[in-house]
Image 1: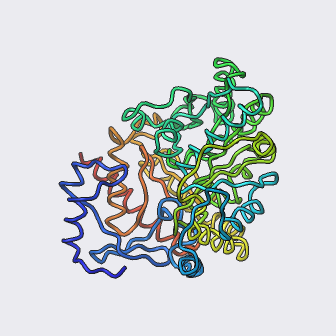
Image 2: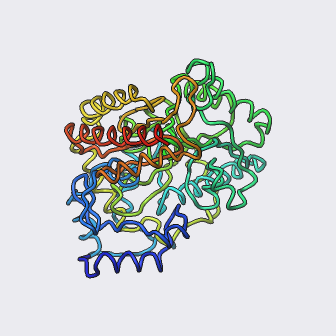
Image 3: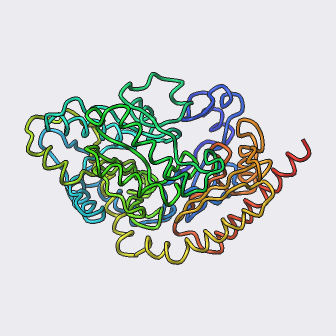
Length: 455
């Protein structure tokens, strides 16, 4: 919509009436924030006229940037034809039908059924219900427990935040008591004197120990992101996923691969599970499936599970008003068409990602960077006071917050998670724009180092 209110009025109305996600309400009411007014290519513009390079693809979702007219036009056309109808009561719509079929083409072999939601959070809620329904139909009603990882993020509904392992979220609500957690495979934080390979195996075997503790007959599933995105781009050691695969292959336990961030090319393959050679039973998707232009998420169900769910009889008592929304599915179809017909996922992995990785690795030489992690088109730089001891730069992640704020002031949108600076630029970013990203981030790191050496 065209702006009809001046910046000061917008900001005041926002402070007075709008509760924001993951925000200190009191702080926002006192100090406010920024109004994003438009976007093009890989740049966002606020209502004060500032141009900011988006180094986070929106919120890990705008893999194709902001100027894909084909997606916008598909949504507009669909709104003219069928703006809404639900998928309850034996009804469907053409975009939902076509998108389910198209997703079966692009997901790993053996995934031929989709259940649509509005977000990754709702999709992971759906996964829990599918898992429990599956084992009930198999006559194994005791298999209800689910294992996840600490510092994982799987969404923010009560069920999804229970699956996640972030203490701040758990502290504010009573989580589901059938979800259990093991440690994350974060070598820099937890590896101690172990080499990365040994630590990766040790971290994976925590899953084996937890299954034995809870009883295989009671454990239904293990859920994990191939790479923990919101947790800080935690890229596991190369030894981790092969050992996880061995453990799961030996047991009657399902694997849910949460691909909300990793999916649709972020790791260099269509899906992160393909990058690591693991074979999930369920895939959670959202975000980049519509390039972030419309809300859409869902579950892909493999044939082993689908055969049981189809033959079991009885109603699957779960659904959402906007499941398979025609305009969202039209956006998904247009987005997948771009991914498939331009080969951008493969070209990005071959051409842009190596340049991105080279620039990330250059940050290791900076005085306050203790470790960098990079895979495909996302990366993290851990900030430290001392490289040898891995002592953090400042208490309560204040150093990374300070660095993030300096970057934004200089026209670069990156994110801070814990003590890490994280970035996930759109695939349409040029090599020159990648260079600009790291030039601006390096300036922010210099300012941060100077600030903390003087304080």
